[in-house]
Length: 94
Image (cartoon, helix red, strand yellow):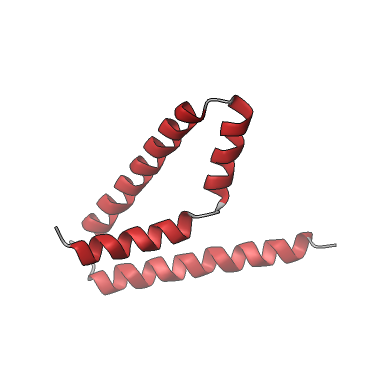
């Protein structure tokens, strides 16, 4: 097991997901339903499946595209989403 890769991936995903809309939605579902175990199981399964899709897509893309370009494209998409959210937030501000 590559523990450095494990720790880096864990840290990045944990920080990215901590206090984001997914966690807030999970908290709301749990509070509303009063069934935190069911909400945890459903949210955990959803996150596992989304992560599996991301890992598989990255592995597949790396067969045809160098890893550095996969990273660059991911970074550009991430920045573009951030800019779109920022612009849409300004438009809604009174």
